[in-house]
Image 1 (cartoon, chains in turn red, brown):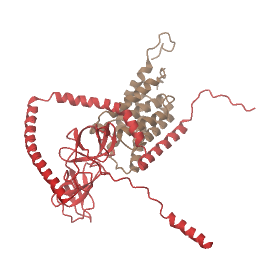
Image 2: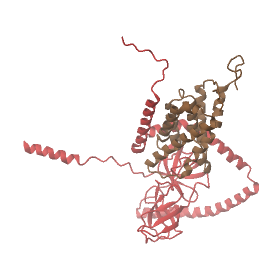
Image 3: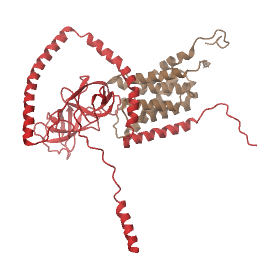
Image 4: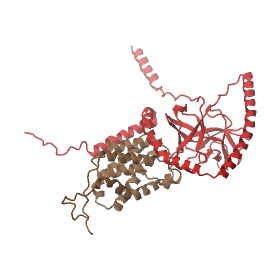
Length: 304
Length: 176
């Protein structure tokens, strides 16, 4: 009679079995996340679940910031205040002029029946942490979909463009900096109006302009602004300054230093206008299959 | 060479394990910036390794996988990157736990260094498949700091299991 003794200790599946199971699960997750973008719901749920923990973790740094703010000397504050007052005066004058010009511009555009430019409103966001992933250039801010932030909206500071919102959670969002390797921005050279696309260079915090001919009209110190033809970034925002040009090959190797940066301030602006985001491309239908099946059909018919 | 008798410890409670994991996650989420970020050890990986070596029956791979998933979310990287790396390293740690337990804390730290390097290398490999650029050899610095932290972390996490020696116990006499 076949009789098996009960096991002394219950261990469940062996470590190897578990290892294989969870490895497969991770691989499936990676494939789903990178190829199909179908895990956004899971991401949102877990992000909300750990957001209290994230807030708790950001308190020590905030506390240090506040204490150091508290011990600022009065003379420094007075100086800063005077400077800001002066700047505000200059800027309010400029603003008045700009409002007049904007009204005139809208009127002229109406006359010309040109496309109306979008009115922009801004959300001020604070950087909660920067650069936790060493492979990419991203920062996380404290405003999310609850504050009308959407993926695709541009982020600016007082000088120019910083980057673009790439992922949105209810209480925060992730901004990919212009210097990230996968980030591109359409630009225009202020001096001559030539258009180009600037790509991030990855780790060293620069941008580059590929696909510009070796004899292209571009100089060191040229200022690049957004061209506005993409429908995402409004036209005329400073992006970068050309810092180095090598004209050895068929294409020039042009390196630019970004104008704005995230190292100077904790605050930044997100433009929360409507994003003209093109829909994801539909999966390509297998075209080759149809004619061949039709042919066989036709052959069959002929056979009859 | 004198042989040290292994210390008799109380079993760790599930609540304490959970608390240490949450604390590890909290330390990882602190706002590390600039240079400090390069030196930041992966506290979650260290805590997971500690329990995998100390109590491999209590800390399953499911926990490691889930903590990896939380790290992926909080870093905003592709889902499964940390999860896969943690699973690999925890499996190695469970495989080696009897051997590692025999060593002194600093000797354990060398093993942990290798395991942490394996962790970093796995994540590097995953990102390279995704087309990312290698951020430079400084990327591996955090494994060094993690290993250097191991003895202190072990002593800290063992504290609640030590408890008061029972004066009536036969084992407590003559020990030390």
